[in-house]
Length: 290
Image 1 (tube, rainbow, N blue to C red):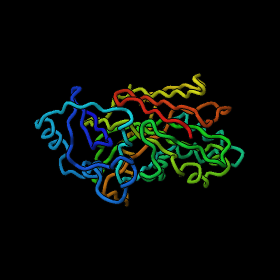
Image 2: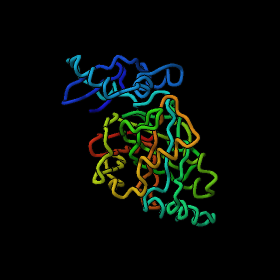
Image 3: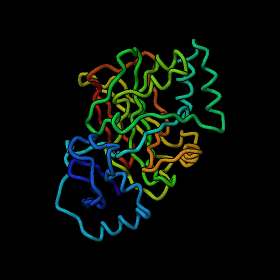
Image 4: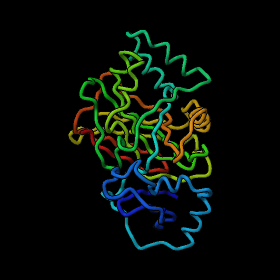
């Protein structure tokens, strides 16, 4: 089952049928009411028994409707987006390389091997782009890349209810200059994208679940890569457990789980680039660089 946030409200898609969820919504802007009231996503994530509620929705019957690409919004309400770093070996190597001149290379090797994961704040809902929306590169960055990431959708009780696709836009030269600059390298307007839906699931995704990315420039592919969840060093439930230590998320939270795909050091994004991220079972998230 997949949950879609749209300009027409929330919809559940199951067995190729659409079921409306009468839980409110974000409105046509997609971001205008974020944090200002209870959105449909907020209401869903705070349900006492979401699975029982979904069963009632399906029992009530489907509707004759079609969801169009221009109606899809980022599947987020008032939640914060957090991220885990250095959870794949490829990411460890890339971070060590980009920060070696600043003397910070060993930090990433240590956190990759440590029991405690790297967790950091990534975005508020107002900073998040939805399907088909524009992401940005920092104006003061010279080396920027997208990071395709499985993103956990977690309720206030720390339970993983589902999964979506995340794009963690990153300024590698700023982070590499000094690890303490990570918030500037990671947190800025439209530094994050989520979508196109939330895959609702009781069980963890299979280790064989594939993640692919393709970046197109002027109609040509300039970078492509792939990995799978078997390369993820840390279990998603462990990342969630650490995130919820001495922290509360009244409306739930989104947690990006890190990237296993990093372009070669000679590559940087440019305005107009089209980023396509696919995760098996969830779908495809497409964004353009503003």
